Length: 199
Length: 262
Image 1 (cartoon, each protein chain N blue to C red):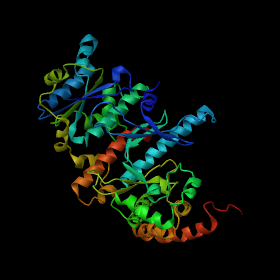
Image 2: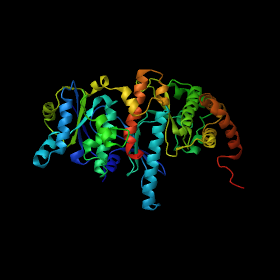
Image 3: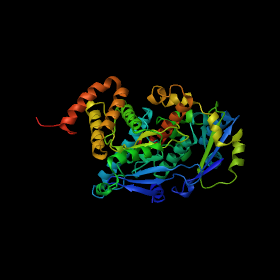
Image 4: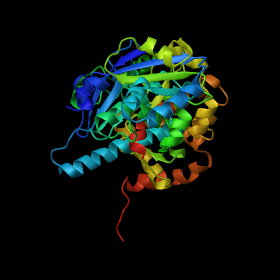
């Protein structure tokens, strides 16, 4: 797990915890649990929502850590400016990752789904202890270093969602995988960073 | 103080113009691999009505970010965008490790007084050429290759209908060869503050004309250099070159502004 600190944000939004899980076996249960948590009422609902108060992101659609961090940064920035388009800073991260403004589509594509086998788990908060232990009871999988992402990314899906196939940046790469991936990463990271002014 | 104002207060200011101030900073203060970002801050202009100021700033930050993104998709070498805060007027872009083409061609740093350069008797033309090749040595490119890169990047940009609006050798940088992104020297176009989208031949021709004038005013004996730029531009533009070339000749006769008489 990695922890990033952002001094410029208010303390309850200044620490970002990022964990990456591989070989996740309970993605469908997790998905069902998130939906249930959102519909529960009363104190039971409060407790359950706090228990799963994270952003669960399908790692296949993340091009680089830089890409993920750009989405986290803009979600926190929106939260500090009262500009959240969704209900929480965590859902805002997922919304920011999607090229369109459709919240349901963003959750379906970038959030956890039954087919997810690798997951980023992000928590924006004050510095928290014992998060890894807590997460291991929620996500059944192997906690891996963040640079394991390089074997998880599904570049074709990213190209499709961002409509990159006909762009000169991709065509000029002429099939050189390394060049192409570097260019895709630059485009999607910049797209996420500029999303708030594109609308 | 807002988050972005705190971010600026922790960054180092490196230059200041009439429209914006430039800072070097970091978005996060943790992680050894945290990279530097360049922050362009369009500060509040006290001489404008606050409402107008806010909407102009927002529109310009957004416009610059959009132009950069369009260039990235069109395979033009430009800095990647790292953060945008349109409310505060801040655009954060990738830090480019290198120097401006103006500096490398011996045009001096932008702030340098012209009189100082003139007084400096050592800057004789012959020496200058040698000096220039020395500076470019670190980048492992010749000045002719630099001209080819300039022409190619501008052509890629114009093919995507992005007009830079302020093409000068100060607004182009050579990025030092490094393990990433490509292991070779790249020419990077910067400062899209005046950029806009246009398909008009006129706008593309004027963009080139502005650069031609910038070359002749900052670099002595620049004609062969600029010819190299146009050659590479012509090759990359293909069939669109003819119309732009013809229009460039017109623009040279009349200047940047069209006559609106009649």
